[in-house]
Image (cartoon, rainbow over all chains, first blue to last red; front, side, top):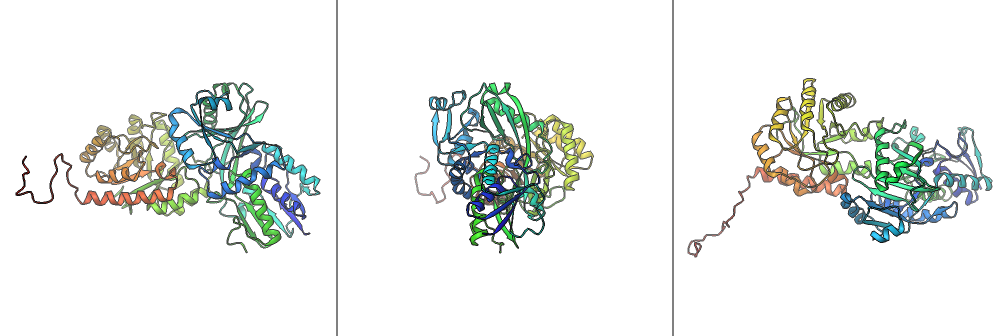
Length: 325
Length: 254
């Protein structure tokens, strides 16, 4: 058994710590903020475990590796496996067609079936139902991982990681840009609203040529609305345009969203490499695991396994960069 | 090929930089498309997205900043000034949107903004409709290039009004003209070239294709084919068959 230091208590750091600890290693997680929270972009995530939907735009590994994430999370936190519903307003019917053409793992549903699934979605004739997909509450998932690690005897330190740590896994997300020069931030903006008048029991995606939206139920009438994808690296505040677009898209799903209370506004930067796929790189005694982009919960389990394989068995999974020695 | 504000472009393809699955795909698509100009939207991606900008600059193509998303003269002029500072170029693709759903240009504000910007030393690439008179006013305002739409942005409908585009081409034979917006297929791009336009500008057709890189390659080939066809002086379409073999001795006058 050797000692490992994991820097960063976001979804990447905590899943890596879980994986190492599960393989019998001694682990300390360093994060100056201690508990998982606003400092991590995974705090602001949607928490959709939606590999089929994501495959519309993402590269092939996202579907293959992401499928395994559902079972991984089900063992560690509460997940809801109600599938995903994808709809489009009538005038955007070509977008629904295209989405169907480029994904798989769904069945086409119509009128009555659609209303049976989500009675509060009136006004949509057609939809795609991805029955195998799931969602989780990211904040609860992070807390559950955190508690699990404490129970496993993993130390979570609020101190700055000492510089001569030895075996280190760097999971600092975008902060690791000081070393990983090809990492960039992709701005995301989201809202958390309470709207008990609308009842949705699964994530709903509304396709739109310019303003795609997803709504993820968090229980008790609370919903996460997300998320913009902007090639910008300021994490200041949400723009009026983004908020307008998110809310009007929600309003077009169900006008009752107009009465929602806005509970939270989140803005952060997703760490991403040029192909938007995660990477594992080894430099000396430090392993960098980063670039989860918008697939934090979907790909963190595979990333963590890749890190553990490299760290403990010198096995190079596909996420390991070739320049890694 | 006519120079664009004194610059000889190495290719007739201008490509937008928005909405690709990833910057890596964007870069590959650019290489495959042989695009010589990249349009970038300052307004939408306005943060300190330095890494993304660097990737765009690394493409090694000319940068044409645009005023996408602007609805008034004032917004467009301000955005143009910001773009000049950020990208260190006098080029500006001027868009003043008049209609939220069709993104049709507001040609009245467009002409006004063009006049202000041209007087201020900008080299304006105006996104306009196929209207001849608007084209004239834009040239009067100081534009030396016209960019009529083929169809609404992102619609992929191709060249909606071929008659008017032909008329425009004939009216301004010496003005570099770019078909901007509406291209969905390589055949649309080839069509634009066959009509004698100098370049095409597209974004969605490539970025939203299932395989953007393959589509970019197809577009490049179509542009090449259309350009050659135009140069080769195509035959006129006609209603009656014109036999390519001698007809003497046959009862062809029946």
